[in-house]
Image 1 (cartoon, one colour):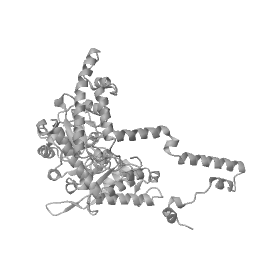
Image 2 (cartoon, one colour):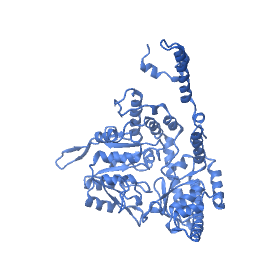
Image 3 (cartoon, helix red, strand yellow):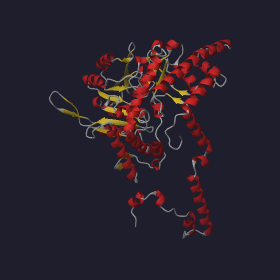
Image 4 (cartoon, rainbow, N blue to C red):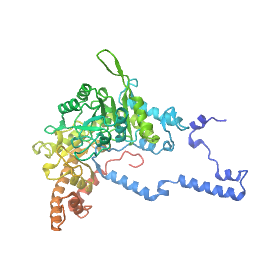
Length: 524
């Protein structure tokens, strides 16, 4: 008799399906009428479960097809987005999603996890390999569902309620999950559970103010310093953060969500040598599925003056924080797909791609930010340029804000991201625009293409300036309250179908970007 392992190793196509009718007609205990009903019901279930999406639910199928078409004909400048590979999509849509597997490999609360365990162990192994880590010094949890939860899980593992966190302020390029709050409201739940204090940029240079970080750390004495950003175009000086943290015996938690692909490729400095914990999402520059990872140190943390070693105690608390502390069963299809992406991240092609991401960002920033005499468009770039995958433009001197320009760009076929810049007071009406190069580099854009993209952005800003004046004049004429509001502007513009400048630029963008392939084999 074949063992379960033998059967599991047999390709599905080699297993002969048993006829539903045969099962029913040979049933020794069912009268003829009941076995016919049973057979009919079983056949109906099989048809329901085996039909394609197009056949069973054309409404959802059409939504997906429309989104594919939008992605094909849009210029995607959102720095936190990318196009994943067909192999990753195949794994995401696989039978791995059917299994429940609370716990960790070798210690599950459900049976039948042999291959789930193998996939998760493989994912962990590849995660360490992708970032050049020794498994004697580092471990990794690959179960977090997304980046913000991963940060919360990490905080919860090492902090008690009301312990202190020092992190980059959101309007200066930080992230909500690092504990953002305003003078009147705790925006992030992290700021409710813990005491958070922001460090900021030097507003003259646009770079992180490490002297301020040092001063605040020694005054505030946080238990964790977060070295991570979501809208910062320069490299973080991790060694400097480490020295500041050591002076107050704080942990360094590096959130490399945006830059993990660049780190894996070795084209920018790694946070690992100077960090205790590293978190990352997996779908941005890493180009994998939507998930997250938490890396944690092992071994000796520090040695005191008497030579006594203090060991890290992160593995158990972090794993307990993920499960059962915050999550139940992990998403096994995502973990399996992440294993695929991490293998791809170790290829020469991936490293070449990440270098092109950097080259494209530099060309994009120079075209936008250089003076007209230098062949540029004269925009103010926060920090004056970029060292990574993104460019942050301050639009305030153009008389428009990021929310209005984002809308016009969307109407002409460009996906961008309104973003706060130093000095902003509202995240809904910010003065900046955040744009990145990973997604369109995946589709084949080179430096010259991004110079053309800069020109498209410039034309969209001009359209915004013109329409903003028209919208305000109409709102004032109509006696509308707040005639200069973003809502009044969007109402005036509508879908842009009757605005010649928008229609013509949209067609130009669609015709151009549609010539670049999407990475999916089945949908070129």
